[in-house]
Image (cartoon, rainbow, N blue to C red; front, top):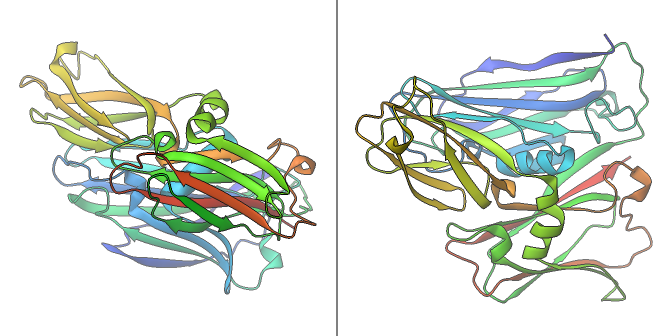
Length: 362
């Protein structure tokens, strides 16, 4: 075949928490790396965060040079905005069953992009660093498993001109109606800008007021939109994405967490093998990415699908046609590039914001 899947890290239980350092020994050009994170619950569990929040940091490094540096939630959201497809989150909180999340790192515009890929031979000490806490999503984990696989070019020779790099540039606590100024680097062309506007009570677009990108002290304003406008004009046209949850009887409300955070809707699956009737469900509340559900006494198991926009409270902004390298935003010749983000009139409870950039590195 022209391509092959390679095992970078065999399935392993990492223990409760820590940082795992993985040497990248593959020599062929890599189109993508995938982390598969799985946890098994010992009893019927209540969640406290999305499952992928167990992976708090993913870094691809060459010595002190960070080629990729995001949290698991940020990496999943960036993969969605980069490819248009939401990675897998398969969530079951039934006793002795598992939760599984896939976190892709794309080095090209699509899988097997012949122009953009990571060439390990150009680096001296390529390593993947994974920081995790198995109990971050729920406290009933009996075992975990991390697998890392890559998609490599095999019989098809490639000479990539570069690869896509992504980093969390900044984290801050937003305040209502207040401005935050971020100086953006001028080193590489921009493909995507992603703003994470997280709150436990309101949607990300509602917590974000103005977003403005200006060059050389407002000499040129390339972007000036509100959070609602970003959702309506950029995020919503990508379409809703969906996640499926399975659980056991929960007569009292059970808290579950997922990726959709804007305009979230949930629908029960009516299956004779699972529940007796649709009214065995009662929706309690949906708040951002927290879905609280309760079921009737005669409901042994439940299953429902959740759909919405803005994965993990992230709003992605393309910096040109994502498929055309020549169309991306090149800061060459600019003296100062500044991103201004304003908190909305209300930023909700426990607000937190991050600025993420994806660039072309030659």
